[in-house]
Image 1 (tube, rainbow, N blue to C red):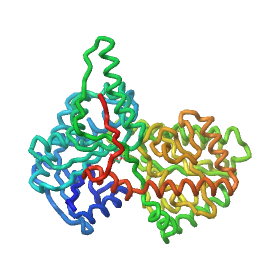
Image 2 (cartoon, rainbow, N blue to C red):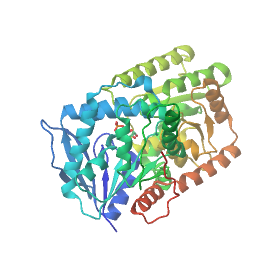
Image 3 (tube, rainbow, N blue to C red):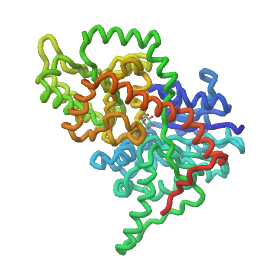
Image 4 (tube, helix red, strand yellow):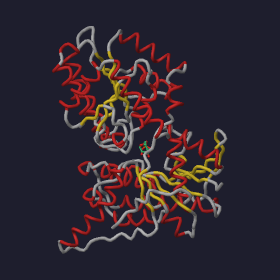
Length: 463
Ligand code: G6P
């Protein structure tokens, strides 16, 4: 079997932990030899073109340091102040500074320089996420003829949002330097194909369209998943049970409504708090019977928009507390901190309602993990945004429009009072789906398609 080389901005073992995906890919990597490559997490005075290698938990990891200026342009700038908001359809939150694009391309070129000496001709190269769209172009420039695949973990933007990104034509051409481009959901594949249609309409209106020659590149949706069996075991591990019991005692029979999200504006957190407020407003009888726990580890906090969302959430939580709290009951616990996967698994198992209500999300693995963590004899209910990739597969969740507070509040109410039989029925179907879409199946099918030894569904893109 060919060696596998995985490339992503973050590498396993560095903070923040790369989570379930890292665990899953580590398994795949161990089975295929090879190495993982990315940013070391450290800074250098001058650009480093030579990778450093180390072995962590039996895994070979290569990395480069970045200069602070390059990291600013590449990560905080182009990746997270332009691509991230635009791909999540938040053009209002983009901060377009043209020099960032240079940093973005420079770091991709630097990654290519550092990688090339360590590649063997039959290595399979798998590049992850929006930080590294130009990497295949840079590798091809350096005469790398290997099979190279790209997986986008976040949604693909609609044509209008894509057009608002500086240099988007170059980024589209960069995608065509890959042999295989994988998206999370059919929605993303459709959005990609739609760009060609959009440009044709532009031509019909007398404009000069951009035409993308997709050549042999295959574009396809490969919805990512979790390791549901392992996560189910984790949810009954000693550490998970400790958390479960501690919170169960504190809740004293109240139904827990739980959200766990990176503190990011794409996650719809203020909207979720507003929906919970509606639930309490419209259902006086539920006021002392439920308790919302929102865990939101801070993220990308050097970027202004992340400070803004953090303040907004502080104020939303304060508003609901001030309005509904009583001396012996608080409506909500809001925690801005990271917890171990096992503690979270215990909380998921305890929660009567799992709230996964992003405004837009690639897949959302919390949805998968919440399902996997449930007690089959007394499962909780998943309330899921229609704008998460997960909504394409988890049809038995209560699907909501997260912009509609009344609708979301009503789904929360249904979830809280749902009879056991209905909860079990829904959960069994959801768990079957989580198993079918396991992360192992995801990695196997992507890599089989990349190696060219599996018939792909032939979803090649036009335009
Ligand atoms: C999303 C992205 C990942 C990223 C993660 C954490 O899931 O798709 O590529 O690693 O967020 O964000 P951060 O900026 O801390 O790496």
